[in-house]
Length: 199
Image (cartoon, rainbow, N blue to C red):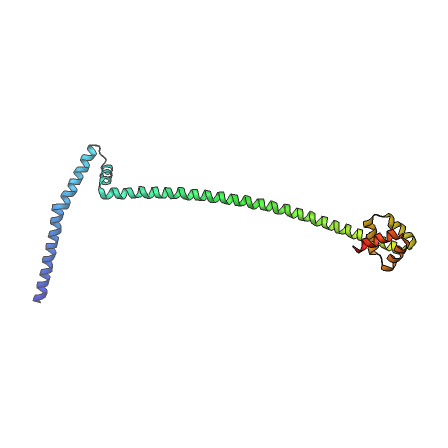
């Protein structure tokens, strides 16, 4: 019990001493400081001085705070330069995109023109093939006509044709019909056409 009484007395003394220290700090430091601040603000108000602006001005003159103020300006400059370079890159990319679009349009137009030319050429080829088929049919009919003619009447007709047409007809005839027509020609004409056919 003695111990508990002693311990409670000790804690009571400690509480008093801790309260006493806090009270003495409050009385000696904090209250006079608050009073001085209040007087200072009243004087500044009467003298028409803006304390907050002055505090900002003085704090900007401090060495450690000026470095901090310079950094935002530097970062602003860096960010502005970055924005400018990014805008320049965007404009350059847009110009490249525009140029590529023009090239694409141009190649598309060229492709359309080439397709139209191809269609025209295909039509011409078909037309020429039809004409060739027609001339082949006509030539085959002419050859059949000569084969049906007698050799006596076919020989003078062939000799009156130009040499290219005559050779073309003669080379298309059956060997028996050719031999009969050559027999009815003069020896000079028969020799001439025979020589031309062998070339």
